[in-house]
Length: 246
Image (cartoon, rainbow, N blue to C red; front, side, top):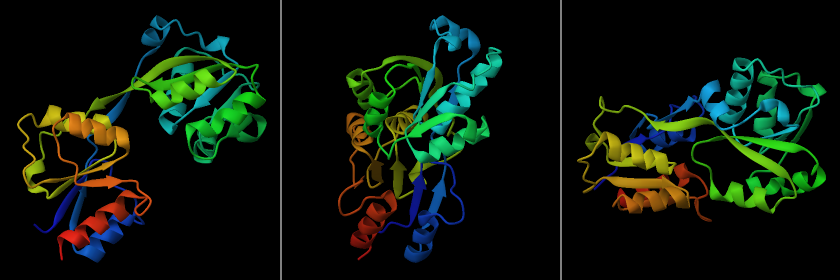
């Protein structure tokens, strides 16, 4: 079976995306549709978690969503974030994104290389702050593991949650391959298409937790990324397509 159409469970990318290059090169149709979206909690829900924003002297940001929802709730609760606040960001991209909400040069901002574990030296460097972790309803066990091993006082605050998007207007059966990046995306497939039978449909997944969720949902995983040979999803799909389309 040749791969002619792919549905990627993410928002449409910009013009320079490797997906669009692959579609052109391999002469395949690639559509994009987010299977999940983020909804923020309100101030009442945050207070129910016994979170007082004024108690914290440091914030740990793992995503741009966390940045947006922290500052949204601060505004909603009429809390003025002090200039003395320390920010620890998982990556430089997240640190740069802070400029959307604060005057960057005046603040205490540090960031890691890539993974959450890369932040450990920063926690050791600034152990005396009282840290808040704005997070989603589902938090990676790796994050908790790193924070518990760090010499810091930290508190988790659920500020947003990932929910299944309504996909009833599309037919997944029309695609030869479906591409997933999170366990929530797999759950959304099950929720939106209860009678989905995989049959010849190929499933591509990114990350071991997504792979696990797919297998638990009774799906056959045909393409797995990242790997040493194929560190990106597009590389993994391209390799698979070439093998299939021979």
